[in-house]
Amino acid sequence: MTNGFKNLKAVTDFVDSRVLELDDDVRAVGWGSQESQELRFDYLIKDFNLNSKTILDVGCGLGDFLHYLKKSDIKDYQYIGLDISKNMIESCRERHLQDNVQFYQGTIFEYDFETIDVAILSGALSYKYKEATSAAKATLEKMFQLSLEGVALNFLSTTADYELEKNQHYDPAIILTWALNLSKKVSLYHDYPLYEFTIMLKK
Image 1 (spheres, rainbow, N blue to C red):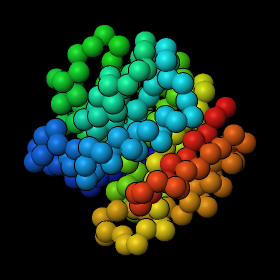
Image 2 (image 1 turned 30 degrees about the horizontal axis):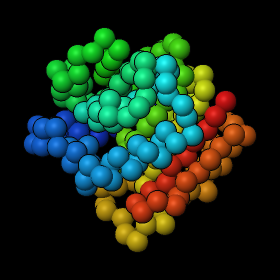
Image 3 (image 1 turned 180 degrees about the horizontal axis):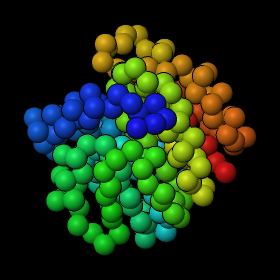
Image 4 (image 1 turned 90 degrees about the vertical axis):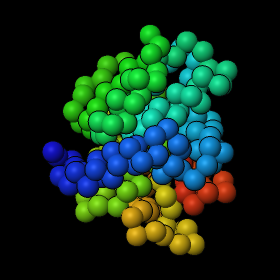
């Protein structure tokens, strides 16, 4: 694989094992609770109107963002979930059978999605491995390239009080620089009670 994805097997093996161990528990995708996960989703969509839009969920995990959409007032959307984990995608396809939903296994560089209005990513860049930083930058760039309206991603922050060995943390200033090289319409939120930040880029 290219674009910083040479050593993804360790990431894929870790995620696949979490699904087998925890099934549809939010901890399978690395979140501590349903409440913290939904707070992340609130920030990811706060600058976008997703009604009647096609949404690409990069690193979709078990499709929890789809559950969030169903509980919201968002209407008439098309949802595309993408994940590197075979176990995750198989689980998603069993659980979510709606006509407006599709799931794909692989990285964002393996598919040429058409008519993506908004691309989002929550937590999928948090696993530490050799090329994690270069993969994150390439993923941000590819998401922005594919989207018609913009993208939203969250990252673990280097301002956290502590870092677990398995987690990849990012300097908000560096991510902001990446974003501003792609768009002048950038918002960064570092004001919510989690050890992370959310960044949004618009076309």
